[in-house]
Length: 423
Image (cartoon, rainbow, N blue to C red; front, side):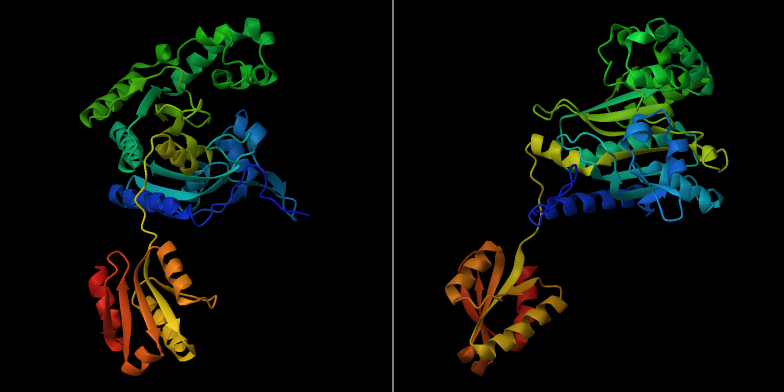
């Protein structure tokens, strides 16, 4: 039987990993600059955590979670997103007691959702996200959005669109909920079963339906922005003011609701406007989630964050033709001619590596011509050749691959020579 990778997953091969590493390093550096410290949480959590936080009427909880029972009969779920786990850790470890507030956290790792595989969408995908927990200042909303935009711009993307909306406070949401029920209820029989189930539980989710998105009632549904309380409107105006101060262009989309129940006030998405990117243009999403910490068992503490998929980021880079600068070349390739020379070559390769010089040699017993071809394929900057004659003289032949120049260097000076010429 021939085994293949499970549907919706992928192997990231060695010729692709340098791009991933470049992106990951960029994300970690930006997190350092913005002062969002890394947190690492388990890949699986108790199922109830996601039911309570993400929302049991969402597609994620109803259709997409990988849930299983362990040997003790406990229901566990592979994490479908990172906010719930981060907030759970924040509450469990009483991080709300830290003198430094808000608590700024970042994470990166695999997430799991059972959904139809599409370009840039997998059932196991890598998500990077940040959370700022503890502040109700609209300036932190602007910081979070600026961070997200900075990610894409730093990596070279230019065709971007930021869409924002306000989901309001509880009073706003309650008034809008009543209006939505009254709007959809007379014709709910025309909608899918999911929408029928959501009408009373969470009618806002109807607006996020993929099946009935073209139904005429979707276009005439009451806009949440109409029901914004004065306080919610003032908060949203302040967020927009900060974005304008940062020179960040945005569009207000009253239909933007996001797919998770814990959002309120500011919600946003960053989209690719590049031709050929595909029908699903969203690269990144986030928003404010005042009330989530309390829902998970902590104090009444506000929070905001965003998350992005590295797979979709790579797709956007490809669509715009952006080539990431990655350094995957080899510093030095050692060629040994003869048995005694090979012993010395093994020693040299080890000594180079101990000094931080990337080094390799032939392990296939090939002739010198084939080894030179291998060095060329590996993009080696230098080739060090040692034979029986060089061994007796206490030297090696060093060839600079770019110019073809060769010279003899004393064996006891070769490390210093390479470090000098590689810098």
